Length: 247
Image 1 (cartoon, one colour):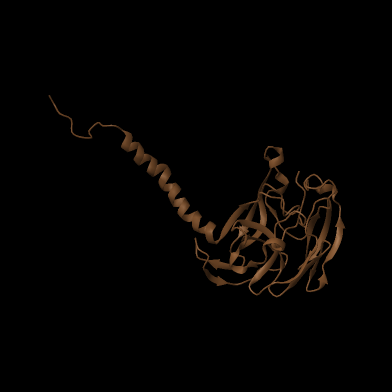
Image 2 (cartoon, rainbow, N blue to C red; image 1 turned 90 degrees about the horizontal axis):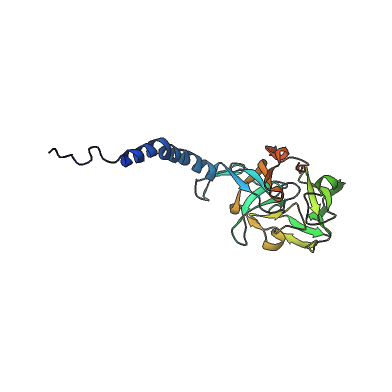
């Protein structure tokens, strides 16, 4: 009687593992090795779970974050290799909160050395009241749901216009400061001024905590409508007067 050599005609299971490695795991691993450093140091994305930046950014938006907007960092670290720009007043940035380290999306309001003050919802920078104009709240009334009668205004900040939501019925910190922004730090605020946990509460943000500049909405899904896509917001860049209502 013939004896069968060890492994001869054995289970095809090892071959299946080799095929899985070659056809799926190895390409996936190589893709990860390419994408992970890019996501860490070049470009990233951030889901927005709160309404603190309404109506500019809505809950359910996935925003694109340009990590090369201000500097270059070593992948998977916070060490700066080179810097070529600094956050400007009016920029929308992603940063790590001084309160708990979570990633937040807010607008840069105060630069290092600025004196920031809020008087009855009006923003003053270095003693100068910023420009305001009323906007039609009707296109945003379905989105700014924290108040039955929201006010939407156009704020002129840093040479750029953007929309700001005011919620008169909510208790909020409508007057603040004056506060001088320390060197190397920035004062952040949400565009939904009466529904934003920002520098009025957790203080200024160190430059090293800023991840990058948010530049556009990649995709958007409405959590109040079973994640129905908001196609009008897909690939929508942030610009002057940004804050289109979703459809």
